[in-house]
Each structure stands twice: as C-alpha cells, then as structure tokens.
Length: 298
Image 1 (cartoon, helix red, strand yellow):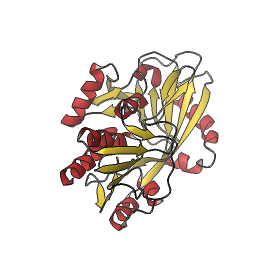
Image 2: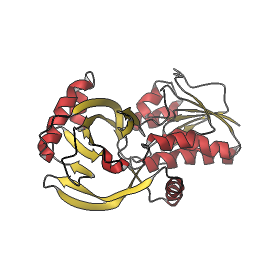
Image 3: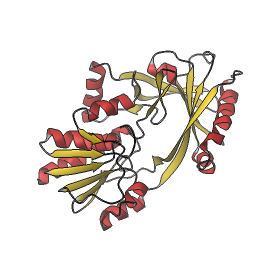
C-alpha cells in the first residue's frame, strides 16, 4: 500500500511512523522548512525556544509508553504538575506536564527519523498518485486541497482560534520560581511559561501566548502584538527590565474539542488534534488511529 501523508506535524508523523512500521510505503509532504507543525521550537541566541505547544500531557497508555521511551533516551522529561493561576497568583495542581530539553520539535524530528519526508513541498490538491492520502492538518487548510465530501464536511465543522506567541528574552532572571501560568480574564494574555525552567537550562526567557481576541486583531501585523504582550507580562509578574521581543503568528492554533478520532471518505483521511481534546496526545493518537484503520483494510 502506498500512502501520502500531507503535513509533518505530530499527527502526520505519528501516522507515517505507524504505517511504516506496519509495512506500508509512505511519504510525507510538508510545505514548511522543518517538521513539527505546532510542536515548534525556534532557535534564538544559540538555544531552542518552544513557541507552539507549551508542553505535553500523557495519560493514554500508548502515549505514556511513547513519553517514557523519549525519557529513557533523554529527549523528554517530566516538568511540573503545578502551575500558577492569575488573577491571584496561586498555584494549582494538575497532570504532569512534560517538556523536552532540546525543544519540543526534537520529538517530531525523532518520529520523522527514517521516514521519507519532503520539506518545502506545497501542494494545492489532494495527491492522486497513492492508494490513500492522509491530510494531517487543521480543517481550514485541508479544505484548500478540495477533499471529498465527508472529509470536507468534517473540516468545515472544525472551529479554530488564532494565537500569537511572544518570546521575551531578559537580561537576567528576576521572576523567581515561575514554571508557567494560566492567565484568566485578561484582555491580551492567556499563558506565560518559563522556557528556561521547562528546558532545564535556566535561560532568562519567557514565552507568552496571547488571547484569541488579541491575535485576531494582529494577524496582519503580528509584530505589533509583541510590545503589548511584553508589557502585559511585565505588569503581571512585576518585572521592570525591558525584554527583547520576537513573535510568531499561529493562525490555526487552538481547535474546539471534537470527537471521532478522524474523518474519512474513500481513500482520503483527515486527522489531528481537532478530533478530541486539543492536546499533543490527541494529535498523536489520531494519526495512529488512521494508520491502524488503513493497515487493517489493506
């Protein structure tokens, strides 16, 4: 069986890995320069900063096994089960959040190892030279390829919100033990994470994620959101230093929770983190579910 996976994010790579392990012939096409999708890390001042997913949570047995395998090889580590919550600044316990010393994109690169991945390969229609095509991407992007009716309907049913991520590099660490924070009821700020803490190198770098409302106002000029987010973080944490600011725009960042695992119509499939709670684990499970269904029908 020949399969083309379109998209080299966590869902597409998990699908391709399972297909390859199951004996299928697979190639992955990705329009970007690197693998990972929203499992994204940007190199800044000689180190990688996580600018997409802030961490991952593992509570499905199969994904737990994957996380442990990454941990055993030094690629991932349990980070924290406690984050601050604002207003108030109190701490709230939750599931263990995992981080990656080399940046979360290193986990995508690990999944891609040995797979035929063709980067910087944009396409504008569903490929017709394979037995099956897996669209591992947000629904709005999948619609641009003209998928068949059932897949198009599932793609149109998805609702996505934008986010702007700001990398804030300070002269030194002055915020104490932060780890990360959820910011509720704030006009521009949704989360703040201590990238030096989650990476384990102590770098004086914070990453802020905007609210969807702020991102929507600045999609055409994301750089303009940088100073706004920097000011908000400074006020929230009582910081007086002025950081160096870099931003990244995510037009399709956060899907509304869905279900079903994936969608299919004939030889075309759609998977990703919109098919469940919007988490890294959900994307990984969705991609693997498509692979298993394809292998079972082969």
